[in-house]
Amino acid sequence: MSEQSDRLKWWKEARFGLFVHWGIYSVPAGIWQGKPVPSLGEWIMYNGKIPIAEYEKLAGQFNPVKFYAREWVDIARRAGMKYIVITAKHHDGFAMYDSACSDYDIVDATPYGHDVMADLADACREAGLKLCFYYSQSQDWHAPGGAGHWEEQEGRGWWDPAVVPERFARYLEEKARPQVRELLTQYGPIGLIWFDTPVCITREQSLQLRDLVHELQPDCLVSGRVGNDVGDYGSLGDNQIPPGPLEGQWETPATMNDTWGFKSDDHNWKSTRDLLYLLVDLTSKGVNYLLNVGPTSEGLIPQPSVDRLLEIGRWMDVNSEAIYGTEPNPWPYEFEWGRVTTRPGKLFLLLYDWLPEFSLCGLRNRVTGAHLLAAPEVAAEVTQEHDAAADSHVLRLGLPAEAADPLVSVVVVEFEGELDVDPCLAQQPSGLVCLPAYLAEIQQSGASELSIGRSGVVAGWKEPGPSLTWGFKLSRPGEFGVRVILGSGGHGQAPAAGHTVKVTVAGETVSGKLAGEEAVNTPRAQYFPETASALGTLRIGAAGAHELRLEAEEVNPEAPQGLSIAGIELVREE
Image (cartoon, rainbow, N blue to C red):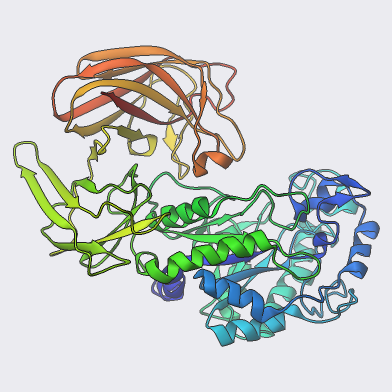
């Protein structure tokens, strides 16, 4: 554990990295035989059902004469990124470096004939960034024995159980392990090996890969996608945003548009605002943000990607103290106005919405001062209130009328002693009460076994009987609209509605059917969809501590995931 902690030190400090998906799949750029191939650019061989012999010809067209390693690294550095993870071999089996294990690589099979990884290693060393390699250890559509190999699988999916264990073991020994060894012995110190899609790999095989990495470079990290929970840190799903802080060390790989590898017809770019919000959000939850670019076959990072990275970098130039090396939000829940990170003696309030009259519940420490991170000379007026009877602590800040930054403004709050916060859910400044599922107490009953994973969504609720309860503190009582949020069962899966539920709080009850009539529009819900249903209105007449209980009266039997609760909102009506 001590060795693992030492390895992770630089990575935890970094918080922000660049992912690069680059390979011969950038030549067709999502188009095959004149027709767009749906889904991800780097999956064109698989989704387009392209035979090996046809796909191999793309190598002869790959000639990235506009690639300049120092330019790529400089873009990452100016964005505030501290490490670069690049695809040394993706699922198509093509090596983007000079491999002695196979001639199917950038040096031997392309007219370019040059090892781009050697250039990147030199450029990263000069700029002080960590170079890291992505390596698809299980899927290999080109090599016999690899998961998804077309000839072996006869065109069936890589998830098909027909993977032959003996052939797969031979593939690991003859290609995967030797190539990992090459990557760790040819390019100097490597920050981490980013394995992916373990598929059929056994725990023993995952351990052998992890141990090989640590044997060759003891300081090199192994990503969680090596499989079987044996990595140095955990990898969330693609574009997965957790609803709250996670235990342990985690990273989210994320796209700027809808693909990883370059697609000429994908122009669905996220705004700089959304990308910056995600950086702030993930940092506040202790999760690293690995943001992807997909260069063209000429070796150019698309200009929309460059523009967004440099805009983030300008924000980081001023505000990176609130990102690098910080600890996550000490409160177990999100705030509607923004996010929180910490350092010893400091809270960083990262405000999406500027509030000249700002209030924060639950900070028990004595505050000694507050100021804008962008302008330390601009001090905030500080008032602290404590109601002993209600066990309520409120920090009020008087801030300038204008925001310090049009995207995210940072206020630094300095306090005395060890950080001490009230973890109980509290009403937000607008009057909203958010009750996320991952903070609910589960009462098990009947055959259903409810659970809440790192997605924060209740799973296993297939029939009435179990219930969820939340405790929360109310400062402004009144009439509240009750909204129930249904969460996704998986990437791109819309939650099934049609359930009937009952909510009870402060002696009042409201019930109804969850129609899922409103799509929740948040970065998290973009890839893991959520829907909201208005259940009705109830009155909470007194301030103080309350308990809310959610029960199922009927669970839609046609819903494969059952009743997937992401949370409840109590919306105060003025």
